[in-house]
Image 1 (spheres, rainbow, N blue to C red):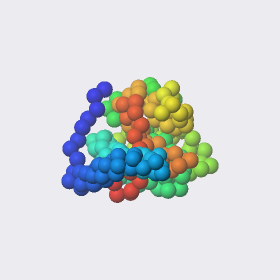
Image 2 (image 1 turned 90 degrees about the horizontal axis):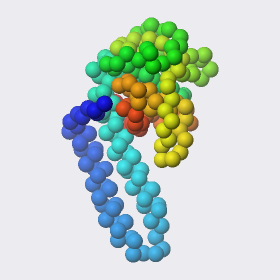
Image 3 (image 1 turned 120 degrees about the vertical axis):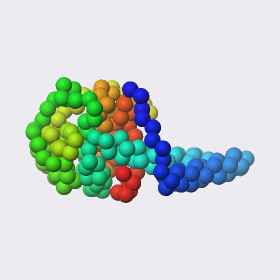
Image 4 (image 1 turned 90 degrees about the vertical axis):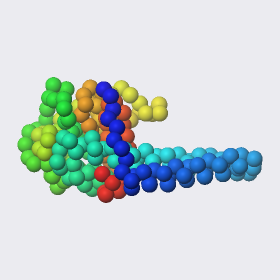
Length: 208
């Protein structure tokens, strides 16, 4: 499946250029510091890696909106729910169907058949709610069902095992064109699975 590409807005370009400029400056400084034996270069690498992660996160957030908007008018509600769940560290797995019907790929859970809203998604994934395990299926502007079981990927990231929700997000995106939002209950980090890869997204509510 070939990935779609979208031109960046002026504001996103500005943010990315700012981060890249920072990386360029810090890289030059690091090269000069290599001559000083008493300097901890590992600390510099850690800071540089964080800046790279920020760049990826900003770009992924921008792309997420454009991947979602043709398939649901309520993508803002999705974004708000993800960020609220992230702030509370409530784990979540949200499957957004796109062109390909996913019924044959998942184990259906409990029918919901309600209009998509941030409040309803947050309620479903509230800890202790019997529906919070498994994935919510979204089709268009509707929450079709909850507590669905998705196929798991056998992938690992950087040779480390990943959690069940993240494996499900990748696994589902390996087998369909669906987009899968996942919120980690351990870190609160938000990611989305698409085309067999997992992308972190920016934590600002206004980004998506």
